[in-house]
Image (tube, rainbow, N blue to C red; front, top):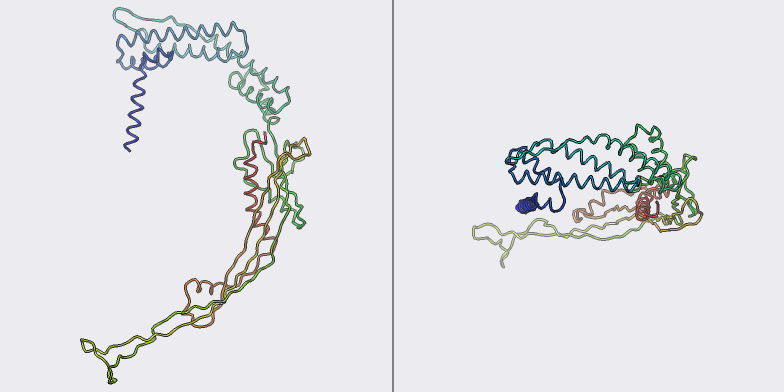
Length: 390
């Protein structure tokens, strides 16, 4: 808690150090205007504050107007967005200063002529929209993914500035998004020699797409639509599927334990029962040794799937990146039988006695269980190589 208080105090000190004079020297005129305007509205601004406000206002306007003049003289259509923003800044700044003008500074009254920037703002806004519309059309003509993507953002700008003048811009945005999107199809191929049902192949590529789909990349897990043109193919090739036979092993061990089994009296040399200090007969515990044989049964079965994840562009038959993947799934079950005195057993032995011998899972079930682990490995390989897809 104390460290947070210290941090807040430091931030306050740093903020306080950025005085209006310092801000003015750095050319941050609008921050000066904002700060002193608030101070003036609250009635806390003195003469120096108001003079500083006047200076900041004049310098800010001078800076923007000079920049606008330069940008217009340059006659570059790309400049219209900055021109538009500068006119907006002039308009907002004028509205801000009007909150506190006229400024009474001693015997002086400071006022400013009002300038209507509406015409300039509307003109600049229209020119910005026209620039991005034409730029977007030119980018579309490139017929490249990058061109379509840039066109998408260009038309978004048109929509932002002047959508009413361009009735086809929404359709152009949709077209740019469609043609600019990279589509990737995941496929599974089985070369292991193990026969598998058709639905298995859909299941193995039905991976979690979290972190894969992006603004411009879409992954498809099946090829139900023949109209889609895929830009990349990712093929999961299953080379080895090995299922071990049902395995059973047994081991025997003996548990022993000593337990009290009654008592006998302690006798003296004459054969008489000894007494303790209170006159009670002295008893000696008797023990017996318990023994129990345990036959433990271990059932075991496993499946291992190995393969490769291959990346290739849709325009080529050759693979340009391959990475191995593998997964193993294990079935293991323990049970036991016991012969002898059960009181000699430990808690773990008793738990085994409660287990019945289990039926072995069939091979196909084991393979399906293993694919759940394999799918995560496939996802990780694709995620690690996601920059190959663009």
